[in-house]
Length: 502
Image (cartoon, rainbow, N blue to C red; front, top):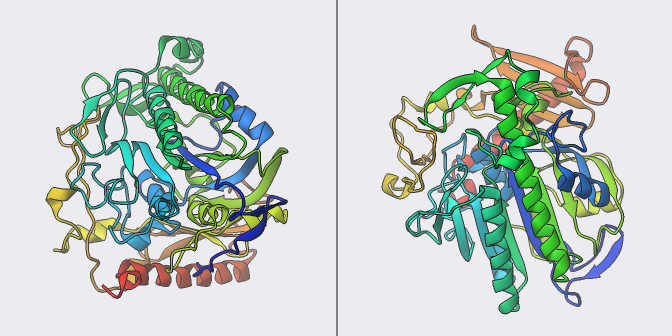
């Protein structure tokens, strides 16, 4: 964690000199899949998935082979994506916990810089309705077609905070069609565009177009025995189904999302926009348990092992990345805000950030970041018995856009956030990890009390199979101290210190 300085206006970016006051500002599109893990791409060697567009991006742009979601679940990662900060700093602890309105987002920064800013798809860091103080509009976006949570075929979206409407079609295709219209509006207004596209795929429950499903018709017979839990599209309740059937539908969604990204890239190319448009794609956490098939990494979504936090990471920007680059740098969704600030010449927010500017690291060809990466699942269960003051009016946190999966019989989702109670030792608990160069320390609480610590050498053992705590106790101790210090900084932010001492 560091309070970072604003970059110079003239800098060398990916090896090419760029004086932002003299050259056009880049257009920016930041995309993210829902529950799309690292191994679920063709270019990472998946045995079945067909992702030709992502594969092409990996072959021609900047491929981040060690890209992490800042958290092993969706709402927290999305908060990091928007703010450059760990989600625990703002109380976005788990799915369904909102942002706080005092947070500064990339959209708020770029709106002041003259960009037209739009959000499309899953929001899930607060209600999307217009009166919500943490809607896309309240957090800096000029326009939005968004959903409170995830969505399937023929999704319901709220346009600019209005009542939800059904948009017929495959959801990824719908989002990209709307994104293209947004880009056209920005061109009419003579403004650079900043678009955030958060797909609903491949989050369960799964569905797919007939042609996409047909690509994976062989999977039910290949994986007939293992049963997995997921939501029924018919009832909205939990069911068990053979994994082969589930994978067929999941992979159809990923292929449709991949094709839609290709539609956007082709539009940019056809209209002379591709050269100076920064295009990014990642997942929001590792593969969900129902879709987990084969991975070189340990763990799945909701775990701080590599399988829960490693995701695809790709950047295209032909004007600054003219040749393919494969980077082993460990980067994170928290790095997006400082990187976007850097490439547009905007100052960083004057508060602790957990992300770093990737441009100078990549241009120097560095494989490691100077500061560690930290991961932490805050123990929210301890808050349930406390009579805490809501951070926002609960009425303003109520969602409106329906989804298939029912929660206590309800098809919409509400959000929460609280003023944090006085700190106690329990605030430092919860599954957590720190990655510093080659080593990773993982800490879990034991049921009988105390903490279990595991140490892994990610260079020699990326699958986290060999615990080195006994062999390298000095490394474990050093990383443990760094982790504890960082947690102290996060808890200070959680208490409101970054908002003028609230």
